[in-house]
Length: 449
Image (cartoon, rainbow, N blue to C red; front, side, top):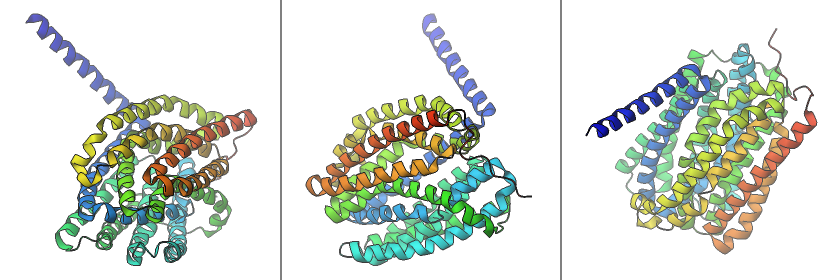
């Protein structure tokens, strides 16, 4: 009995020590606090998102979910160009000189609205010539308004706080977005008789628009009112285009397979694959939180060139990579639970999750190499690699999906993410050797006079 009591006391002391270490880490490390905030924010967001995703998946069925997710994936490919990378430029400039915020914020709002308007027309044109047979035009129109205009406004508002490393606000915007979409889902289930994808898209738009307007107003109130500095836009557009290209390429090799499944296979296959990929996204949450928290830091370390950003990345990568492997094993084991949550219609999603279980590890590997290049001023080189991988991914999907349906899409994803990890690390190693001892490729911007 005494030994048992001593064991309990020992365990209690161990827990107490670990909690004290965690508290001290959060108190003394801004990176740890920001990672914590993003973990909490993304965690709450995904908890709410998972809840309404289950409700919507059951209400729409595999075919309806496939139609909606196919349109979302299409718009996600175009949405990075709604802003032309202006949010990333805001983070880069303001993280190095806070005095630039007002003009960067004003320019971000202007460029986002103008570029989103152009993309809106292009997305509708793409629907007319490619997807008009299987997807209603109203569904495309509503999702495009939601994600190109309001969704990007939420993103840019969050990036404004990222520039000041105040990721508690960024996290709150993410939670707000999911919470309002959850409320929209409840309204949809209550008042929509037919439970059609088009009906859900209207409620989805409402939740996104309210979040965007609140977020933008809060940025202007807390950080500063927007001011236009049109003379700054043109000189930065080249780098901004690189940011947008990289994000769009990322959208292609992450999401184009869902749209292509709608066109080249069946809506049911698209729904099964989309549900599995959503679970992979949920599992990647801790690494994504760390990447968001560290993003502004990569620009600060980038003042010392690639040696600075790679040194920073190598401190974080073992933890992220180890987590990616561990969660992949967990996904493989826990996959049979999926139909119990989503319903018997998603039985094939078990196999799809197991096929994709390696993705969290591969994503961790290439994301840290990518942000190392960005922070050191090699966004153009990063973008070129990502575009080449995106093109490869599209080619693989054209070849494999008609033969193997969603399994072909899974193979294309695994090959593309693996190729991206290798290519980015080889690029980073080559550029680090070539630039060793040279000034940084992208020095800090000059402050306004």
